[in-house]
Length: 215
Image (tube, rainbow, N blue to C red):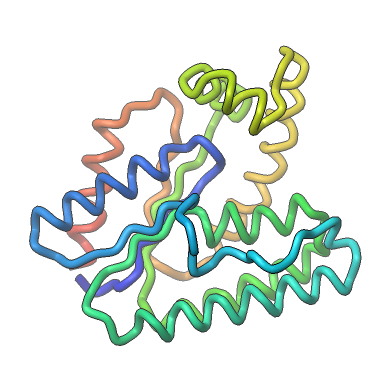
């Protein structure tokens, strides 16, 4: 394959981890060496461990975060550039970096500047992107929380009432709109899956076809 980096992204609960595992298994079947980084994996190369943040409206926090992101991404690319494996990475470009910065009230122009730097850094690995776009955001939250149960719904997400789900839908719709605008601007091969009916068999078929085009 031409690419050395397959990015999988989208809102929480989009199916990114399942997709990452599916792609890794398919590459294994084809005897293509690969490394799948789960979002919650310990010692993740793109996760910031050494600081907690309050708000990126604080310029010092925003600048520290941006600088750290650049350092981590450069180190990651340098580590993998000479390797023979394909890296499968979920969440850490759009949801956990760009989307996080947006949620933390970073100035939008600063976010756009950071994304340009991220794209330039990652370009050495010739990345491709699979992005899940949720057409009905509130419905997606209700669906994923129903599947994952109360520990995820209440303990991790703080969703208890019908009003909570409505507000989560509004909040994440704004987040997705901002992130998706950036997704569309990134000049890399991409597959956007607009999830309406959770037709995973169709989505997997489209992913297979998309990856074949990268060979």
